[in-house]
Amino acid sequence: MSSGASQTREDFTPDSRDPEAQADGFAHVRNAHESEMAEDYVELIAELIEAHGEARPVDIAERLGVKAPTVTKNISRLKVAGLVRREKYRSIFLTDRGQALAEACRRRHRIVVAFLQSLGIDEVTAERDAEGIEHHVSEATLIAFENHIKGSD
Amino acid sequence: MSSGASQTREDFTPDSRDPEAQADGFAHVRNAHESEMAEDYVELIAELIEAHGEARPVDIAERLGVKAPTVTKNISRLKVAGLVRREKYRSIFLTDRGQALAEACRRRHRIVVAFLQSLGIDEVTAERDAEGIEHHVSEATLIAFENHIKGSD
DNA sequence: TAGATAAGTTAGACACGTCTAACTTTTTGA
DNA sequence: TCAAAAAGTTAGACGTGTCTAACTTATCTA
Ligand SMILES: [Mn+2]
Ligand SMILES: [Mn+2]
Ligand SMILES: [Mn+2]
Ligand SMILES: [Mn+2]
Image (cartoon, rainbow over all chains, first blue to last red; front, side, top):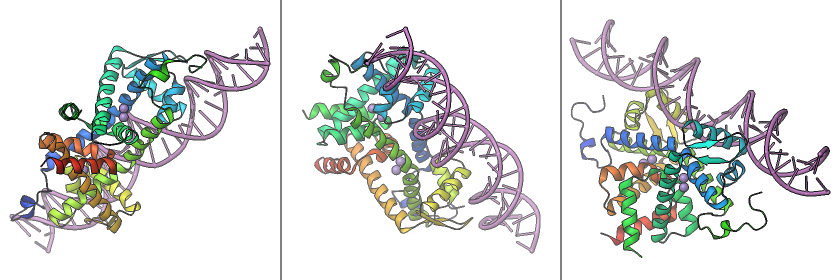
C-alpha cells in the first residue's frame, strides 16, 4: 500500500489533494458532460425560434457544425428526455421544461461571454471559450462573474 | 426558405450570431473534449509521481473516481499517443511529451483555481469548477486570468 | 401540377469512455 | 516460503455522439 507506515511526502505536498474530493470533482465534470448536448441544443433551438419563428434541423446542423442525421438522432433523444415537442418532418419546439432550461442556459452563456469580455478578451475568443466553459460554471461562480461585471462598467 | 425575401429579424437580433462562427465555436468544444481525458490523466500522473515517486493504476482510479479496467484501457491509449511509458503490471511514467503536457496542464489548472478564488469562490467550488473549465480556456483568457490575479493581491 | 431540389429519416458503422465478471500477476505477511 | 490479499488485465457489454450512404417526404418553381 502506498500510504503505509511512515509515508511522509503526501502530507506535505500542497498538490496532493484529498483523493475523495478530487474524485468528486472529476465526477462533477463527467456529469456536466452528460447534460452538455441537451443544453447546447435547447439553447440553440430557443435562439432560432426567436430569430426565425421556428427551429429546423437544417439550421441546427449548420450552426452546430454537424451533419443532419446527428441532429435527427439527438432531437429524438431530447424528445425522450421531455425537452422538445416535435412531429416527423416538422420544425422543433420546446416543451415548458425545455424552455426553462433554454432560458437558464442563455442567461449563463450571456454572463460568461460578458464576463470574459469585461476581462479584455475579444468577442470571438470570448464566445469560443464560453461555449465550453458555460457547462462547468457553478451558480456561485456565475454570481461572482455577474458581480465582477457590475463592478467594472 | 426561412431567410427569404424580406427577412428582417435576424439582422436586428443580437443573439443571432454568424452561423459559421458559431459552428466554429462548437467544433472547438468538441475538439477540447477529445484532449480532455489525456490532459486529466497526465496531470494526475505527474502529481502522483511528485507525491509518491510513482503513479499506480489503483491510485489513478481512486482519484479519478473510476474503476481499474477504465484506467488500464485509457493508459494504453495514452501509450499509443506517446504520452506515457509503461510495462505491464508496473507503474506509469511520462514521456517527454507527456511531461510537457502535464506541466502545461498543471499550470493552467493552478491559474484557473487561483483566479476563481481571487473572485471570492471557496476552494472546494473553485477546484470543482476548474476541473471542467480548464479544458476550455484559451491562452488569451489564461493570461487575462493571470493578470487579474496579479492585480488583486 | 409535376419534376427537380432541398430537407429529413433510417440503417449501419465507428471511436470513446465507462462498467462488471473472470482471470492473472504481484505483493504482503504469518 | 507460500497462501491470501491486493493490484492489474482481458473480454465483452453499453450509451453517447459522430459519420456516410441510401431512402423518403416536403417544398419550390417552371
Ligand atoms: Mn456550450
Ligand atoms: Mn452556449
Ligand atoms: Mn480537468
Ligand atoms: Mn485539472
